Amino acid sequence: MESKMSETILQKLRLTDLQQSLQQAGYRVEIASDPVANIAYLRSATSGLAFDVRPGNRLAADDQSFADVAFSAVLQVQGELPLELVNRWNASRRFARLQLSHPFLVFCMDVSASGGITLDHLRTQIEIWDRLVQELIAYLRDELRRPNVAAGAPDSVASDAAPPSKRPVPEADSPATVQ
Image 1 (tube, rainbow, N blue to C red):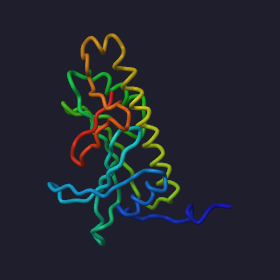
Image 2 (tube, rainbow, N blue to C red; image 1 turned 60 degrees about the vertical axis):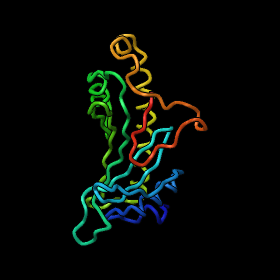
Image 3 (cartoon, rainbow, N blue to C red; image 1 turned 135 degrees about the vertical axis):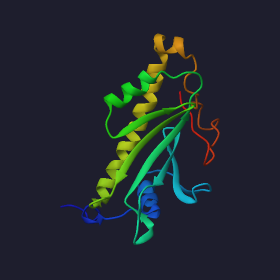
Image 4 (cartoon, helix red, strand yellow; image 1 turned 90 degrees about the horizontal axis):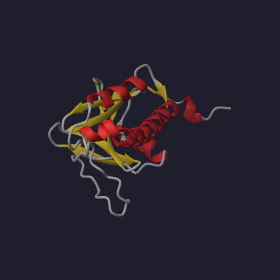
């Protein structure tokens, strides 16, 4: 027998609902504000990597609701990062993508509620994001250790692999870094 949660269909997304879903999945989440774009968004972290959940297309009938969101994490690149490393990730993974805009590496995943989604589907999208972040961290560490990558870019991606007690808390607008 399916739970009541499975039966609820979301036709639109709200930050407060997303915040609650992320908290139920075990994340600490805060609502932040982008002073330049004048929008609210969610800020959280997984596996030591800070990420944002930013609203996408607003719905005309309700300025607090939107049709989609983008999960994104920004990493600062130090030195040169081979574009082939980014392209190899994108060619071998689904759902999320990497974009290199030196000096930043941006990791994004879109979630749409168009046509309606269940709360279980939303929870699954959060789980996919978490898994992909973990895979990305491992991928970057493995690829950057390879001699041909390391020779061309000794410190390609800045490290934030310090123990949690030694790691600075990222500010809302500062990029996170990982090795």
